[in-house]
Image 1 (cartoon, one colour):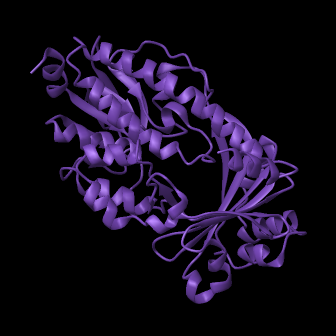
Image 2 (cartoon, helix red, strand yellow):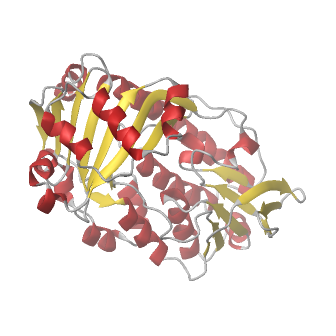
Image 3 (cartoon, rainbow, N blue to C red):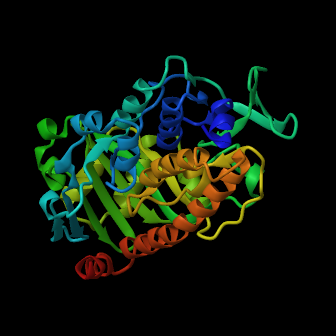
Length: 385
C-alpha cells in the first residue's frame, strides 16, 4: 500500500451533509476501510421530503454507483421509461417528444428519496449523526480540524469534506465568493395519486416529464415512482421578490399568485396549480461562478452543490456531485500523490475545470427555456443535437 493510501486509511474523515455527494463518498471510502462520519442537520432520514426524481447518467451518476457496487440495486429501483420528455408551448401545443428509445445512452429516473435510501442502507450502522448542526469550524493544529456543533458537542477530523449544499458552512473557508442568484425562481408542489385522481393531468407527463414554456415562464411536471406528480412553476423574478415569495406562509396566497402569473395559459396546465397539494415550496435558483479560485486549505475540500451549485436545467447537478465523490476517492488513493493535500489540490483543479463549461451550459439552457419566445430557442437547440 502506498504512503497516500496509508495516510487516508488512518484518517478520521468527517463529511458534512448527507445528499448524493456526501453519501456516495461515504460509501466509497468505507469500502476501502476508511473511518467515516457523516454529519447531517436533519433530525432523521424521514424529517423532510427529498423532492422529485433524477435521471442518472451513465458516465457520472451510474458510474459512481457501479464502483460502489450498487448497480443492481439501482436498476431495481429506477425507471427507464422515465426518460420520456415532452415540450409544449404556452398555448398547450406539443412541440417535441423525446422517448426513452430515442436516447442513445442510459439515463433512467430514480426518485431522490429512493436514491438516498439506497445509499444510506449501504453505510455501516451509526455512520450518520442526525440532528447535528455545525455552528463553526476551526483549525486545531496544522493538520486537524474541530467542528463545533449546536448543543456544545465538538468533533475532531483529520479530513473534512464539505458536501452541505448551497448554504454550506464549509465553503467560506476555501472562498469568499458565494453563489449568485440566477434570476429564476421555482415554486414546487405536487399531486398525490395523480393517475387515479387526475388522469388527464398525469397523461401530460406520461411516465416521464413534460414542460410548457413561454413568456419567460414555465410549468413543469414530473412523474415519480411513488405515483406522485411533482409540479414546478418557474418564472423570472428579481432576487428581492423571490425572497419575498419564499417568506410567504399562506399557501393559498402562493397559489393565487401563480394562477395570476399563468392566467392566459391553457386551463389544463393551470389545473396543475389548482389541484396541487396545499403546500408550495419556493426555490430561488442560485449558481456558483463558472470560473472559481479557491484558497489552498489543508485537509479540507468541497464537493457537490457546496462546490458548484447550479440550476438543474441540464439535469447534471446530482450526477456531477456523485462524480465528484468518485473522483475525489480516486485521487485520495492515487499512488502518485505523497500527501493528502497534494491529492486534494489535484482533485480541485480537475473538478473546477470540469465544472466551468457545465455551469455555462446550464445558464445558457436556462436562458433558452425561460425566454420571451420560448420554446423556439430550445427546439432549435434540440434539433441541432
